[in-house]
Image 1 (spheres, rainbow, N blue to C red):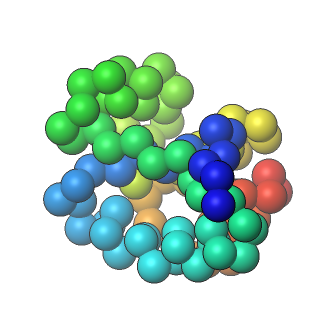
Image 2: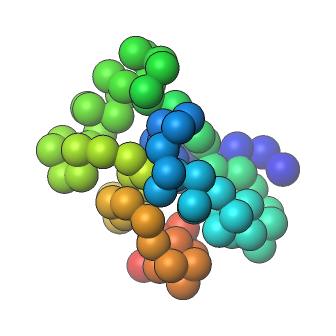
Amino acid sequence: MAADPTLLEFYGTECVHCNEMKPLVQQLEREIGKELTKLEIWHNQTNLKKFQELDKGRCGGVPFFLNTASGKFICGSASYDALKKWAWGK
């Protein structure tokens, strides 16, 4: 399974909400047949800068999911259905 550069997940290693989303993200990756590009921002300044550029003040925190192809995004925790729709650009 290759990482999809258009499906981005920004997260923090110790983030409770990010860790709650892990099983849903793994389920999504299995279903769509590709991995999300995961970027840790609490300990990685390069990823933090990229997050700030792409977030544009919309969420301000993690988890932040961005579909760069459709422009759709999710701030915080979400249901599996919402995550799936996001991945398909809906």
